[in-house]
Image 1 (cartoon, rainbow, N blue to C red):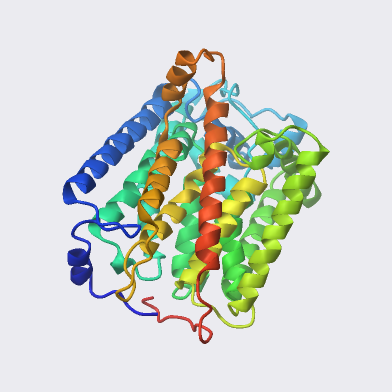
Image 2 (cartoon, rainbow, N blue to C red):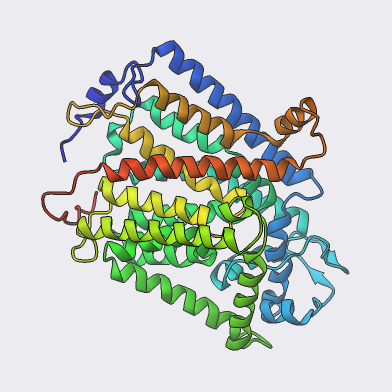
Length: 451
């Protein structure tokens, strides 16, 4: 693969912020970055404000905090969920609070598997307001890091101009998905961070990479594309380590008081059953309920998986050790991620994965070996529209509904429908970009430790 030149050469080449085959004037670039900055600042501000002060702030994290009390008291949290066991009172926290009653009104079923449950149980040593603020602070730091990791896994990240790097970060910070993840205390961002870290470390620190992937698999519905990538690229040590982490977590929880392996497995099945029929941003949730919709989505998903499998096999996957930083590897990772978002249960916050899509799109829009992958002005408008729909606040949707006489419509459901439509469009464009990739002349070998 031809190199795009030094970072300095590329900066000069992209002085007009040329993307998608179009040279954009500096003033337009500055204006676009200013708009993205305003969206990002507003989004992060809302996330912190709601996460700290809204009655529902941290609602998804509360399940891990609440059932973490059982872990610190030596009882299986999954046994407590299944049997309705009460927390032993009083509870003394490290911040000096002693509680005669632990607030349970926000508690839901902790959906992630044992490794994440055990890690987040550490926050149960803090009272709820302090624990919520501490986890929000951690999540904000994770969110600030994710887009930089998405850039670092690109085939040749030095090809990106400073403006492109800033755009990737600002888009991620402004996403509706990022905002909701932060304010609800979801695990989406930390799982995304661990997925990207695992890919980045796979050829340098396989043990650490496996640990990252193993913890990320606690939210397997989101971490699945990283697992597929590393399996297909024949990173056996990483994959086996990740499975060992999950097995160790399951065993560790089951060995706690009243815990059993069979009961933990029963809890896992219960989580799958509960979420399978819930609404979300996946395609099935946008279609009429019925067997026709199920069959249509199932047939389309299987057909796409078969096509991806054929493409990967022709690229030499599973027969050779694939370089994780080739365009083919990143396209497969991106496509499997988008397909997962569309095909199985996901809420809008999991669409934070699209940071990979935007990073890859901006990377593809840069010159490669003196040639340009031009998609024209229409392509630029498409990506701008995608950013708009993925960052649109629910407050704006409420105003739009009020103007058009639909004030009673649920803005959250509408936002998830918009996200679903946008992710579907991104998948279509990404699938085309992958299809036009040339088959390598010979199988790529693993890069050096520095990538």
